[in-house]
Length: 371
Image (cartoon, rainbow, N blue to C red; front, side):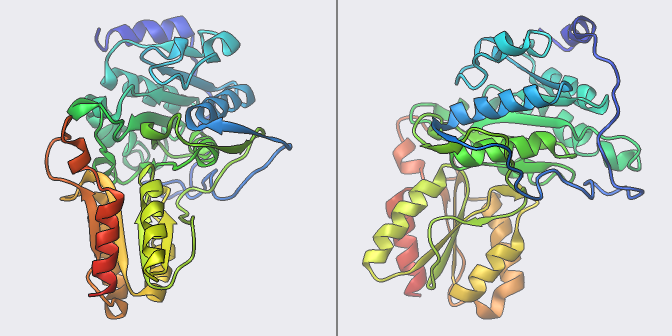
C-alpha cells in the first residue's frame, strides 16, 4: 500500500480548505509567535481515575468534540489501535473523521501535512515510534519547514503526530526505541513527552491546539501502569515549560522525561536515605526546552544528572549538558552526569542491562555528590 492510496482518502473525506491557523504577523520564523499551550485552561469540574491510554483517549474525544476541523487517523485506529488509545472514537464521530490509513508512514504524515495546511487539525498516529523513520523526510523537510520556507504565508501547524515510544519489557529492537533526539534537531517542530495520565491529557490537547507541528511521544510502558486522578473536563498544560515534579532539593538536580521520571524518583528516595537532597525536573517539552528552569535549579544545587532511555551518544541529554555548562560553568561542583541507554541496538534478552535503572542512577548521584 503506497502513497497513491491517500488520494482516495482525500476524495472520500471530501476535505476542503479552511481558514488556516493563526501565525505570527510578518516574521518568517520557524515558530508562530502565539501558542495555545502557554497557560492552563480549565472548563468544568470533576475527576476520574484513569490510566495513561485512557487519558489520551479522553483528550482525543474532547479534541474531536470541540473542533469539527479535527481528524484522527493512522493504521488500525478505527478499532482502537494497538494500544487502544482510539477506542470508540470512530463509533462516536464517524469514519469520516476517525479512519484507517494504508501501512505507509510517509503517506500518513504527508496526508496530515496536507490536512493541516488546509486549515484542519490533523492527529496522525504512528503505530510505534520505531516505524516513524520512513516519514522522516515528511516531518523534518516538509512539516518543520512549511512556515519558514513560505515566509509565514502558509503553515501546517494543525498537525500533531502521536507515536508510542520507549521500552515495553519485551519489544526488542523494533518496538522499543526512543527516537526523540532525531526530531529535536529540526527547528520548526515541537517535541513533547508526558510522564503521567494527567500530563498526557493536558499536554496532548495543547499540542493539538498549538499553531505549530508537534511530535507527541507516548511512553508505552506507562499506558496501563500509570494511574491517577484526571480532570474529566477540557484543560491544557503549558508547552515548553518544565516542572519540578517530585521534590525540591539542594544537593543535585535530576532532569528527565517520560517513563524515566518514575525510575529517577525511586533513585531520589534511595539517595535521601544517604542524606542527599535531590531536585527532580520533568522537562515535558524537549523542543523548545525550558533552559531557564533547569539553569535556576543547577545554580542552586551545583550538580546535574540527566537520564533517558535513548543511547547516550547523541542523546538529548548531551544538548542539555552542553547548554548548562555554557550557562553555569562556574557554579558547577562536579561534571554533568548522564545515565542513559547503551550505544547498541535495543536488545531483547539483555534489556535489563541496557536500561538506565534505579541502581545506575543512584550510583551516579552518589559519585556526583562526592566528586
